Image (cartoon, rainbow, N blue to C red; front, top):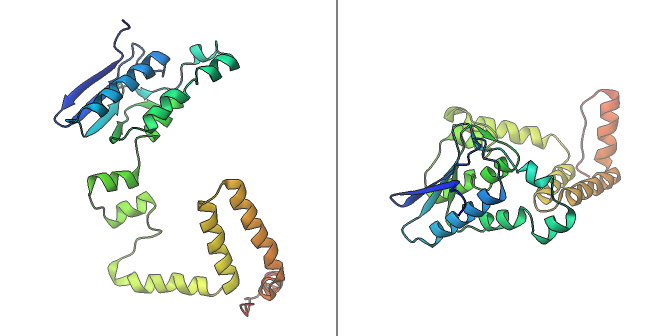
Length: 223
């Protein structure tokens, strides 16, 4: 049998799984990934385990793919063995929460492995914990944090800043940004470009360009 390079222990209802390769950088070798999948499957099947913590060594969580092994592959072997994909897909389909405890390096595939575990939205959903305004700002859930007594004034200031622009353009910009979130990059860019082209039909577009060239405030008519 191959040496154990994945260590797993149960602490109450949480499994602590540690990448423990002889190499402290924990390269993601086939042996390590196969053992990791085996350990994760066993913890998934254990009804006493409700969550899994995945960590590495003090030096590295994981330092990426096994380059030595990769250098020996050709297309046929990589494709037929579904190299990397067979492991990543199984981890991605894990039903129980996996928490990455990252200490030291998380490079290449190691970073991807951590990213498959961490998520602010998932953390909030699974823990049920609330967070304050400063945390919401750090998470990107809000665009600014202001003192309570300035709340309405600041919100109105932003609204008035937006309202100074042409309404058809404001609506088009919002539509373009929302569409970009729901499509691929190329489709989002194409949609934005077509709205940009359509803007040349607006009187406000002509007024905006004229005001810029004449260095004056634009007088938009919202048409």
